[in-house]
Amino acid sequence: MSRLQLALNVSNLDEAISFYSRTFATPPAKIRDGYANFEVADPPLKLVLFEKADAGGTLNHLGVEVSSTAEVTDFASRAADAGLEPTEVANTTCCFAEQDKTYVTDPDDLAWEVYVVLADAQPSAPSDQVCCAD
Image 1 (tube, rainbow, N blue to C red):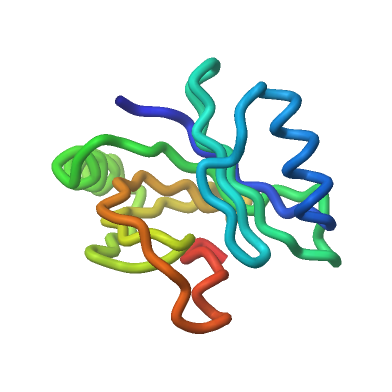
Image 2 (image 1 turned 120 degrees about the vertical axis):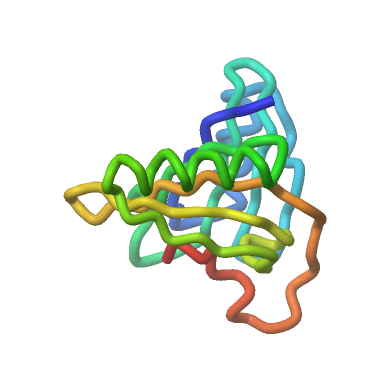
């Protein structure tokens, strides 16, 4: 299973949760302080919301959620072969999940990540609310 990830900055998390729940007829899969994510079946989408009062309505980052670490590694290899200089991050905790991931950055400095969620994670500090792509 693969799905596109769209991570947005929102000015009011409660309002955004209400809007996107109605838009995709799907409740959030995870809600934390300043953070929510949705696992939308149709279209296959991982929608991630970060509450940032001063940056509402802006793109945070994009990604592709995959099913295994092997898929992350395969993407990193393809990206390196294509000269994209991927940044690999293994066994990290961010976005309230334990993950293996790799990043590439587009010419306009927009981060794209390919990642697998290994387990849920509770925040241990306020800094855990920041996704690794920030």
